[in-house]
Amino acid sequence: MQSASESYPFCEDIKLLTECSWEVCNKIGGIYTVLSTKAFELKKIFGDKLVFIGPDLGQGHDADAPTDFRERKTLLNSFSSHKFPHGIRVRCGRWNVPGSPLVVLVDFRPVFSLLNETYGKMWENFSVDSLHAYGDYDESCAFSIAAAIVAIELGRSLKIAPENQVAHYNEWTTGMGLLYMKLHQPESATIFTTHATTIGRSICGNGKPLYQYFENYNGDQMAAELNVESKHSLEKAAAWNADCFTTVSNVTARECAHLLGREPDVVTPNGFEPSFVPESSKWERLRTKGRNKILKIASLLNDSQLPDNTFIIATSGRNEFRNKGLDLFLDSMKRLADKLTDADRKVVALVLVPAWVKQPSGDLLVDLDFGGWIKPDPDYLTHRLNNEDSDAVACTIRRINGEMEMVGCSRRVKIIFVPSYLDGADGIVNIPYYDFMPAVDLTVFGSYYEPWGYTPLESIAFGVPTITTDKAGFGEWVREIKADSLKKGGVAVISREDTNYHESLEKISSLALDYLRANEAEKAEIISAAKKTAGMAEWKFFIEKYKEAFSTALENAKKRTQFQ
Image 1: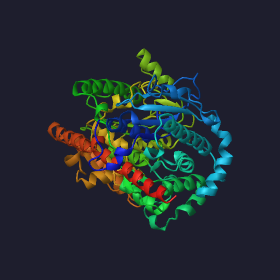
Image 2: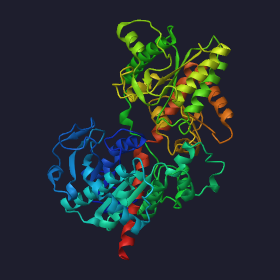
Image 3: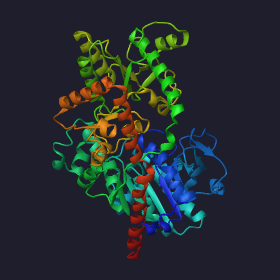
Image 4: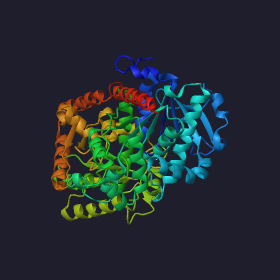
């Protein structure tokens, strides 16, 4: 077990480290990737003193477990039958990710009956305004309160003194748990990580310019205007009351300082675990399999056979049209089509973003299953949507397709929307995302709002060069290490401001065209640079910042309790 004592002696005092997140064994977003890849390095440091706590979305012992949760006998075995307050139940086991850390899934339904009383205490003690709550607020608070109760009971069950416990809470969705722990076990150290502020995301999601007027925004005022008062209030209280407040990038640190009023104690960038990347022989097999599948799908949607050397370019991530740069990606693909000549390679542009899927495209299924050649309608969707007339990506593709038809360049770039999670069982592609990555030649993530940016880091880890922006924490980090070009680092970082949209799409299309036309030696150099940059962002390097956060939390908790 690696010692944490050399630089951060307080870490030696940790006898129990719990980490709570809505995305433990629940793959719904980027935080899942953060936790599941970070677990390997944390496990090397803390062993089974590390316990992740997540929601039991099966809701009970008789329900199916998540596919990456293995319920089994561990040192927590007796804890599964522990009698918890309020009728809370848990399932104990291990998370099926590298490191196989201990995990407790919490059935939080009994806590709903406590919410009104708890909200009153949170207002009295921390000024958390839950009166304006709606949507997922109650569910998130019920889970995080239950998780805090479980963390407290776990320490008691293992006979670990509260002052030797660190409880880490991720995002506003677990903020109530942190505050609950501070009320009921104040001797324990707490860490709160915001991966993206509620206000920052809301400003951008509502089409407002975040950067041009950044200094003029007031967090509390904007929360009222954008109807996110309760979430913002909870997030702000958790940030101010944590023994250590962290965020994932300098981009978001500036946001936290201005909109939450507290500057983070430590910036903890998101690393990547290299064991997720296949060896070269398997990588080549996956590349062949993925390209064969996507070119077959694209040929059917294109109503003509695409050549084997077709250039595949992709974007992926959460379905936030502007924040994640889906708008910029699509418009830059139209500009790329304008620049291509008939002598250039054909291009397939993939939007790998989950949407409101109704079912796999029936025409496409018939063609794939029976070898037919019926051109699917619509010819840009692998899956039919419940809202095809209003989905922003679908509407934009239709508009761009019409524009390309008018100028006669529609055969140069085929844009395809794959609106389902690539979990290996989507009904059309049927290849998991990481297994599909080797099939791609270049990725683009034109983010407008991106606290870190896991997708471009994943891309270069798999040897796929990427284009990202300076509004992603990852992009800013790449610039800091002076690797911000395809040749230098396998990563091109472009500027995205409130006023330079057309300049940005012009830059993306030019960079994509240059890489498409690069010779094999030039491409090999860029791919090697991408892998080298990815190697600098492995968790074994970035985990040092977490050691600093743990040490800071323990030190501040000790100081705090001396005066209570």
